Length: 520
Image (cartoon, rainbow, N blue to C red; front, side, top):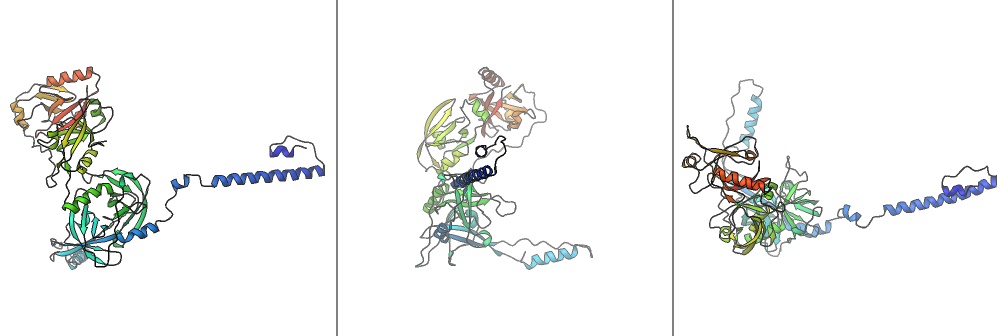
């Protein structure tokens, strides 16, 4: 007899057994099989047991009911009303008798007239959300929720309604601070801000608001991304979440699982107006100093240094001998501004400001805006390949003055301009400045450089926006006055092994920017 089928393995052929031998072998087989099944069951149960750390990584919160119960009463509905001017009444079009559209248009315009169109001023209302941050009655919401409102009311969960005063607003971050007077003996429930900087992608959050006017509603999701730029303003730094945010949620709070406000729900991306899982909130650490300024001054007081900046591209980084793409490139410096007084220059790459790393161009305006006015700060820059530190005193941004922008007069050339000696380099036809060219392109008298006469279509120079009438002021931070200067500088850079040249380019109005072009 084989040894009980070789322990349930594959047994070799064996001679025929007696009846008693067969029974013994069957009993042995049963024991072996039972032991094998028991071992398999134990192994399976061990495999299915929760592994340390695995459940926490995939499992959502069991419930948020306890936290929600503590914070729901601090979230309010913001209702506004305003008087709008009468709209112009559109006359009913005259259609041929019997036209299939005659009945439709008559009914359409009759309905609009019944709704009061063209009958005079009318009242319109809108709904949004907000939350109480101070038991004395301060409420935070979005500016667009109360924009142009004649009256603003805060509606609380217990059914009470209080008229709100607008303390201050910030259009750039889209925040507003309201103040209500609590009824005697009915203190308001308030919530506190948390630290949005410690949030990670994947952290659970709760959004509470008033979607579609239904009343207080809670949704749960996660942080989908951080530092989102949605092109809504110069200080975009949004949190992105998939917690459902719909119309009416604007101005409502985004909470962490401890019940602290870590964001103010502000915008969504949606073709229909409903949530598709892409919502944006102003981070609490961005909002906190703004709210404090609105509370103290009724307005914002942002830092300002007076520079125009642009992105550091891989080509610009290579031409400036940077070790990697980083920082913000200063394109121009405002005369007599804080940066000019502190010694910053066009062509400097700012890598830290007041001890904070400037990772890219977008980071610098946010850091400067959050810096207290009149504070003296250290600014670390890379200048001509060397790291330097300058000191400057932060000024105050004039919120009412728009940022200066380039204003190029329409090109108006003489019918028969005199011939000009030109040189073509890097797809750019250029010439030395003359009085005639200054007049032709309306170039300001104080500007110096090599005049761009034409740009080869489809060239890198054309793609980078270089145009006739522009000036090549510098090449790799050396002043240029003639096409020959440019040619010599390019030859020197090519000999050094450089693949691209950094051009400082000015438009006829003097607005400066930098661009890198490949050396031919």
